[in-house]
Length: 239
Image 1 (cartoon, rainbow, N blue to C red):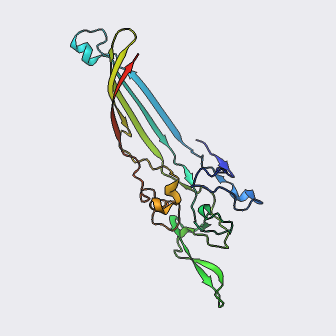
Image 2: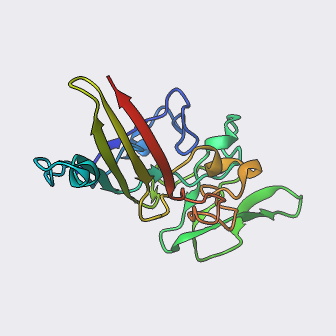
Image 3: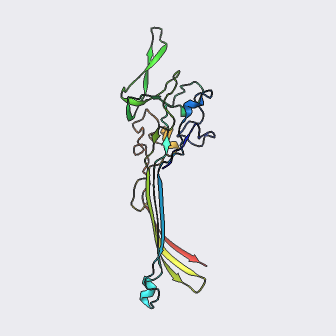
């Protein structure tokens, strides 16, 4: 188990899923939260097995059943944190792409919503009203100060198995030929990770980090497939 807390991770804007600058540089304590690098749990297992069968035999049994290699990798990991985004220039600093949201502590975790301006008799905006009162993350409009913490949401975890099987044919003392097959994502399990552009770019599909879309905090709806199983045959010559 691990815990990674910081006040900034994205100073060089290499990711869309967390803010690239503080909301108020004079009060960095408001930026304290889970780091985008926070992965509390991660387990990796790898194995390689050179089968011992029929090594001392001869004839067809040796050629067909001896010198097989089986290898695999299994990874299970917590998902990557990301930040709910308003896509509004709430603080009038020109940085609408990574403005956070207003946090409703009594709202439902997976729900986001936009807000409607409340106008006075002169037509001026005096406040905003959430369209969905049970949403936890409310879009921060111009003149508001986003209160939702950094990286308060987390992508689904990873559970992936890769498998390789191959047969070795000796070609003298220094050369050998290997034929086999490789299976990536052996069990065809969707792996939804926090991809950058799908987080905030509507042109790439529904944006899972943007509070105003039906895919908010739901990467399955954002257009990603999660990666299907890949199978490939291999032929290697070692010399």
